[in-house]
Image (tube, rainbow, N blue to C red; front, side, top):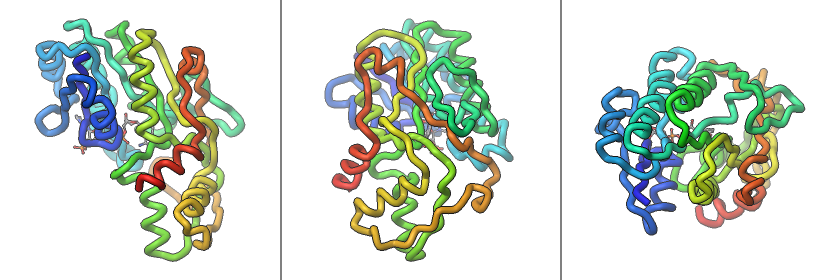
Length: 277
Ligand SMILES: NC(=O)c1ccc[n+]([C@@H]2O[C@H](COP(=O)([O-])OP(=O)(O)OC[C@H]3O[C@@H](n4cnc5c(N)ncnc54)[C@H](OP(=O)(O)O)[C@@H]3O)[C@@H](O)[C@H]2O)c1
């Protein structure tokens, strides 16, 4: 398989490169040489003619998106549109990586693949627009929503919590925001199975189970042997941000599980992350 990975220097992009390169021909695209928000990316993709494209490129600064909607929509909505156009012209399949934040995140709700979208922030609206834009152009499309992504060697919630514990000695962590902590190498393995299935559609690839930011941080520090760091649970209202994230955008994997594709529980994945780190 000839695989094109966009956003190849990002957290997921790097993990996909590591996962797929031994067994497949992999082409890597990253900025500035390959800006997916440039309409010419459709022509470049059609000329390259890979079998599958995984779009891991995105504007991911959720807070900054509030004051830069044009840039967020260019990367997250127009980018997938141009990639889908290129795929349509050369017969490639596209994996569009999306986000749990496309849902409103109403407390008590658990979101399945075909639930109604309800994006609240600029970032979330741009990701939802990217899903729609790709669907309008391409049938050979997997929309794969992930959540609370972390992986080796990247800046993410776990690495920031450990750094903050070292710096401040104690932490206040939001206890009323819930999600599915999801390990990027597990997503890569799930994507390989999904692509092999040839069953296009919408999927949620998340480690099983859900938790709060507070419990995630507590478990992480315990596993790192730093269970002594005092943690104070706080409501999100005491941690004001430009973009208010959904409180309970918790995903359920129903569609991939029906194909036998299920990621391990988040606690097991976190243990592996700690062991490898
Ligand atoms: N991280 C999470 O918790 C999370 C949660 C849910 C969903 N997701 C989704 O998962 C995917 C991967 O996220 P990630 O954590 O790997 O993000 P990341 O580390 O921020 O990587 C994104 C990459 O995309 C590149 N990029 C941005 N705009 C681009 C453009 N116009 N053209 C080409 N490349 C561009 C960035 O390059 P620069 O370095 O040049 O900016 C960066 O290397 C994204 O679709 C994201 O929306 C992430």
